[in-house]
Amino acid sequence: MNQANRSIRLLDLSPDALRAQVVAWDQPAYRADQLYQWLYQRLAVDPAEMSNLPAGLRDRLAQEAQIELLTPAAESISRDGHTTKTLFRLHDGQLIETVLMRYDRRNTLCISSQAGCAMGCTFCATAQMGLQRNLTPGEIVAQVLYFERGLRQQGVTGRAPRVSNIVVMGMGEPLANYANLWQSLRTLVDPAGFGLGARKITVSTVGLVPAIDRFAEEELQINLAVSLHAPNDALRATLVPINQRYPIAELIAACRRYVARTHRRISFEYAMMAGINDSPALAEELAARLHGLLCHVNLIPLNPVVGSPFQPSRRADVDAFVAILEAAGIPTTLRVRRGIDIDAGCGQLRARVAARTTPPPA
Ligand code: SAH
Image 1: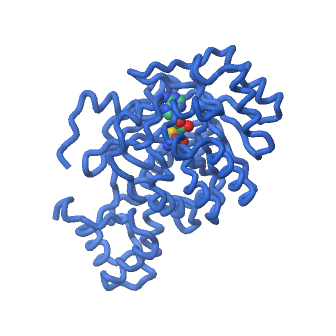
Image 2: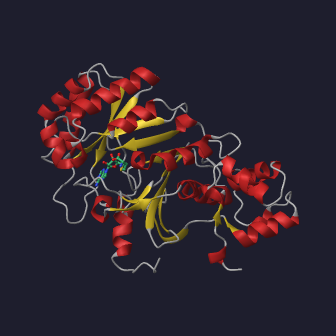
Image 3: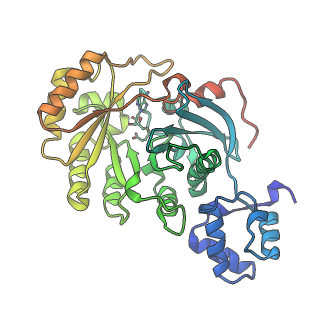
């Protein structure tokens, strides 16, 4: 039977759905637990590997189910070898990006939550493609499994052997794909699943207020980052259009509710753009906005996007901005720029590859 007939996408199934499927195949429910372990702990890609499952079930899986959901379509590795960006093609031809950043003691994976994005941020490459569709839970988790397999195979000594941190900061607005995102996060932190600590995962949002309130109620201690980029509505609305729906006062109020509820520090992302949002006056205004909030500001050097007028801030302006925030008692870090030579900024590899390839028909 060919690929097209293998219509059951195992990674899209929640543990309950997987159990129901196994029972529908006339197998005892505990086989689902074994299968779950093969998928998320042993990272099997082929049912033939699943040695503790009966041959009948392995045949069924081979005929009716598929495991791998991603086809690597392009890959670039930074000159220093520490950053790898992979462009994946999905079954319907959509392209998404995932970036692995290797440090001495951790491997941080930046994953996508949607193909494209509807938020329209004016400095972001992904915004230019619009929203194509939500990723399924399996397509989100599969990005992690793919890189984890690669790291385990390499087994490089002296470096963390596995994906140790995940940031949902690739393509898309994760909180606009809430249910699928959370199904994938639950699998990633499940000790019987992938088993990563919730605190090792950060979800970044453009600032969808109702979803932030929902996030605050979740039991898992997953970190939240909010893309602020400006301290007032007039400026932010020109950079982040959703600000018209959820203005800064409402957004910061939601962040304060989040911190009050969870006691977790929130981080604010702020992409530094020359002459746009990097003046000392704006740093003062930002400090005033965030006063008394358990937070941290992460300044991001802008990755220039082709066709966009925005340029990265000058180093001296960034330093002055940091100094003002720090003096106001707001912990601030400057994100290390990784993979700039490989289009590792949001949406950039896809834009380059899509310009020279035509996706296959869906
Ligand atoms: N939609 C989510 C996550 C996606 S992008 C969000 O808005 O938070 C992750 C971060 O990269 C966001 O802070 C986003 O604003 C930022 N970003 C997008 N384009 C960028 C660029 N060209 N340079 C620097 N940061 C960028």
